[in-house]
Length: 448
Image (cartoon, rainbow, N blue to C red; front, side, top):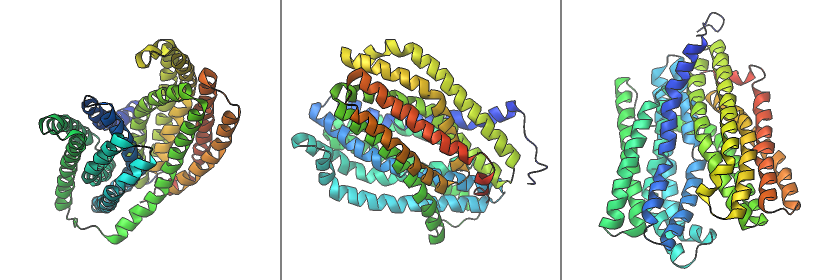
C-alpha cells in the first residue's frame, strides 16, 4: 500500500479497532494469573508448609515463564507484518516456527527443571517440609511448562492474525478446567501439592492442544508445511534474544527494588509487596492496550501504511495517558481506605497508603510507557528495546543506591522507594521510548 495515498480512519473507527483487540486481550491477561491464584486457594487449605512451598515454587515458574514471554512478543509482530503485506502463507510459517521454538525450549527447560528442582528450591531458601513441597510442585509442573510456552507462542500467532477473542475463550476454559482438575487431584486422589501442579499441567496441555489444532487447520487451508524450518526458528530466536534481554532488565529492576525494600525492614517489605500487587493489577489494562498496539502497528507497517500507524500510535498514547490519569485520581482517592482490606497492621497500613499515593502520581507515566512499549514491539524494534532496557536499568540503580544509603524504613522508606521506581525508573523508560518515536526510524524495522 502506498503510504502517501493510504487513508486514515476517523477517531471512532480507530477506537473500535483498538477496543476490538484490547478488550478480549484484557480478559485473557486476567485469566492467566488466576491459574496460580486457584492453586494457592486450593493448596492453602492443606497447611502452611504446603502453601509456602507452592508460593516459592510459583516464584521460580513465574520467573522462567516471564523470561520466555518473548515467544508471544516476537510472533505477534512477525505474523502481523506478513498479514498486513498480504502474505498469509509467510505469516503462518512465522507462527509455526515460533511454536517450534517454544516446543524446543519447553522440552529443554522441563528436563532441566525436573533435574534441578531440589537445588532451585534450596537456593530460594526453602528447608524441611517447605523444601519438599516446593520440589514436588516444581517437578510436577514441568510437564506443563512446555505447554505454557506453546500457549505463549500460539497466542502471539493469533494476536498477529488480529484475533484476541480465541485466546480469551481458551484461557477461560483452561482456568475452569484447572480448578476442577486441581480439586479432584488434590483432595479426591489425595496427591497434595503434586496434584495441584499436575492438574495445572493437564489444563495447560489442553489449552496448547486447542491452539495447535487451530494453527494446524490454518496451515492446511493455506498450504503451509507443518514442519518448522531451522532458518525460521533461528530468526525467531534472534529477535527473541533481544526481547529476553529487555524483559531481563525489567525483572532485575523489580528484584533490586525488592532487595532494597527487604533491607528497610519487614514493614517496608510488606507494604512494598502490596503496592507492587496493585501496580501489577493496573498494568493488566495497560498491557491490553500494548497487545493491541503490537498487533495493529505490525499489520499496518507490513501494509506500508505509515500514516495509519502514526494515527494508531497517537490514539493509543492518548488512551494510555488518559487511563493513567483516571486510575491515578481514583487510586489517590481510595488510598486511605484500601489498607484494611490487605492488612491489619497499622504500620504496614500507613506505609501502604503512602506508597499508593506515589503510585497514583506515576500512573500517567506508566500509561505512556506501556503503550509505547507495545508500539515498538509491534514494529519489531527489539534491539532498541533491549538497549534502552539496559540504559534504563543503569539510570535506575543509582536511585536505588541513594534510597538504600538513606537508611529509611516504614512509610518514609516506601515513599522514596516508590519515587525511585514509580517515578524515576518509569521516567527513564518514558524518555528512551519517547526518543525513539520522535521520527520514523522505528518504522523501518517493521517492513515485512
